[in-house]
Length: 167
Image 1 (cartoon, one colour):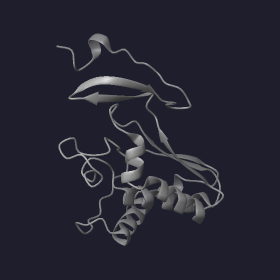
Image 2: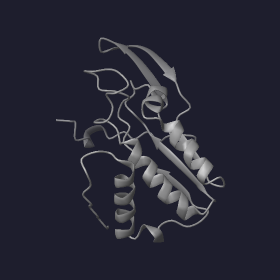
Image 3: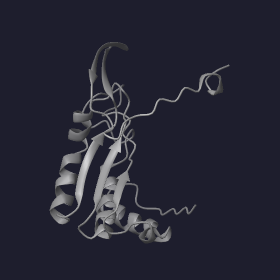
Image 4: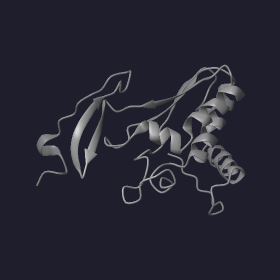
């Protein structure tokens, strides 16, 4: 396994992020991992649309992968796909998260739109992998909404006594 680390400024500035992503992906020889026509999955960390202690549109930076990083990686991968293949940016946020709010706050649809314009032959989409979303009030689940989930299906794993949570 290859590991690369690059230090940037403490701010999420587009050029700084883009330069660091390119350097890191070149350091780990990512060019040999991506071929035209590939179907690529990018899995950011989308925990929740905001910090529970401070709900709102400006309270997400510390609990999700920064959209600038997602866009920089997706741009790099799109370039290597040379107008072919597909990129699916997906995660399964906390069950009580609101994916439409996450998309809005992080402007994820804007990222997909920009990349789709720049790389018209590459299919780029966002995907919420959760099979359901919960709505809670005061920590109590009051509603469950069925979602499409992963189009490839799901696997249920029963660890039972082998779970680290037992004991």
